[in-house]
Structure formats: structure tokens, C-alpha cells
Length: 172
Image (cartoon, rainbow, N blue to C red; front, side):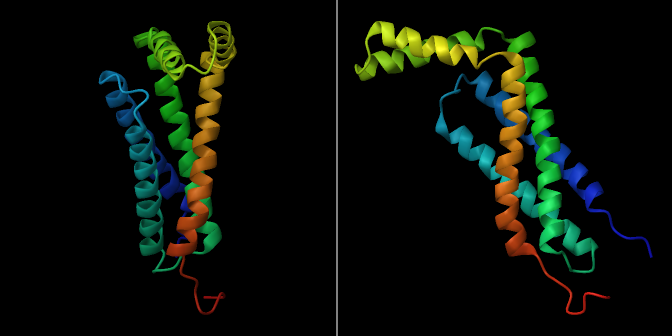
């Protein structure tokens, strides 16, 4: 009997996660809702859903059993694949399709800081100048990939603990 590979399940669901995150990002950009916190919750919901569905599929195909380590491994790998795909899309969108999106985000940030009234104009300029250094395409790509991996790993630790089901006899 051929052993079921968690990698195959993780790659499949990682692509699904990547496409889901791309769609959320595209909708966010097209509706100009970059600062809307609901899109963060939508992203989190997509990640949780994909993690749960992938681990349930693996457990079902594995005779109803999945160890904690297998669940974590599936979640970490699919998060890496999803993060890579969504970060590639995000970088492509920001560099090729709509390079002005970052400028609009800085203008919105300036307005929010001015409305708060806690900083002087020089302090606002300084804060925006520092944050602009972290907005290069390479940095945002790497941050997107690692951010998705870290979030996926944390969620995988929790979800794998809930979904796991060990065999009574580990030698079966």
C-alpha cells in the first residue's frame, strides 16, 4: 500500500490559499479599501478555512488519522506556497499594474496623522520617510511571504491540535 504524502495535499491547498489571497487583495485594491480592517479578517478567515479543509482531507484519506506533526507540516508548507503566490501577485500588482497605489496609501496615512493632531508636519514627514524605506518591492515581497508563513504556522499549531487523531497502536 502506498503511503499518503502530506506534501501533495499541502501543495494543492497552498495553491488554493494563494488564489484566495490574490482574490481578496484584488478586491481590496479595486475597491480602494487598503486600510479597511475587514479585509484583514477576510484574509484570516481564508487561511483558517484552507488549513481546516486541508487537514480534514488528509485525515480522511489517511484512514481517519493524522498526527499533530503531519497537521503542522501540512499547514506550514501550504502557508509557504500560498504566501509565495500571493506575494508574487501583490508585488506584480504594485509594480506593474498600479504603481500609484503606494503613493495613495502614503497620502491616506498623512491625512490620518494630520487628523490626529499629535505630530508636527516635520514629524509626519519623518515618519512617512522612514516607512517609505520599507516599501520597496523586494522588501514587501519577502515580508509578505514570511508573514504568511508565520501566521500559517501559528494557526497550524492550533488547528492541528484540534483536528489530529492518533492511532491507538502506532505500529499499525
